[in-house]
Length: 252
Ligand code: HEM
Image 1 (cartoon, rainbow, N blue to C red):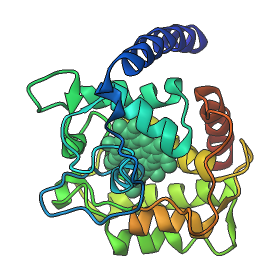
Image 2: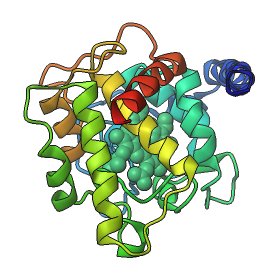
Image 3: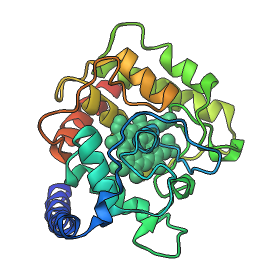
């Protein structure tokens, strides 16, 4: 059943991605990712999200630096140019992102719309407080320190990533009587761990350099200076799901 659903989603993603890339080619619509990809600190009026990667892409100008009215075409282009995330994998989260939209146009969203709880944003984040604790979107050094404490080696293995996530999911309800995660929240939380392992690690084998992952979370910057190079091949949903299986097995 799940694989039929995935096949339908993948087919849908390919159609949407195809249509959007034609639109991209015809129209500067998707070309707002500026040529200047230097890291720049966001200004006080720039909007940012609870996602370290989306924020990093905006800080590098792969997404609009002001974080406003981001379209799926811009998300696809930005994720491709910045980290070579394939259209299917980008749409996995991107389609949900549109459900948070407060722009007045259901085809765009502001990055801070992503803080809307219960669509993608969930309790038990690796580096953010729960919604009942107030700020569910800003990087929280204290929470992150408890997660980072698991990263004692140069590289983060699947087992280490799974243990860090599991410990955080055990600590969060102890600190928040209103803690709640739906099955979908738990699934997104697995996917987020898989995303950082896939973008920075060795294929579907984990081993993401600790320094690169810390740079992403702590500075919302892509770790180019630390040696990160965007993959030559697009990173696919199949990769993420293969990793998810392994992270789940290591969490059992
Ligand atoms: C493609 C569009 C994407 C959207 C719309 C998106 C959105 C989000 C949102 C709303 C959250 C908050 C979840 C929470 O409550 O913790 C989140 C978390 C996260 N995202 Fe993304 N994301 C995207 C892509 C990526 C990619 C490519 C990566 C790769 C590294 C990534 C890594 C993460 C991580 C590691 C977290 C967990 C943060 C934490 O738990 O503290 N995301 N994302």
